[in-house]
Length: 99
Image (cartoon, rainbow, N blue to C red; front, side, top):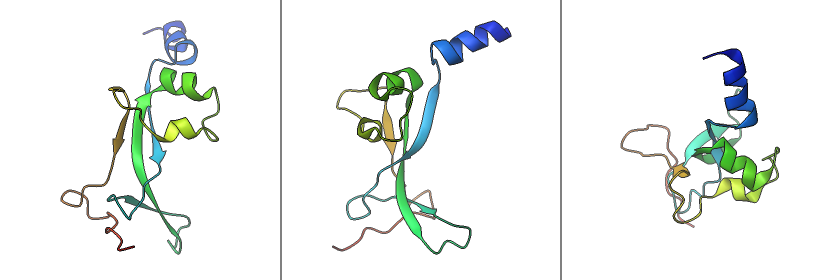
């Protein structure tokens, strides 16, 4: 692939899939556990979202950091997926909290 074709695909068309951390509620879902610092004194819980970059850009514009639509998949959107931690495969899942 030439440099100009790659530039067109990635920068102009946004023809790639992105993955990022999404919201997760440990009261109702098994979540991945992340750490705020190296010592892991503060944990946070997250899911993993994947979707096409062009759809994300259409929803949120160039900045997804303040875009609530980025953190959910609409019903019937087959190109967007949210992955929660699976305790049968991943050792580092949150327990379901009793609230």
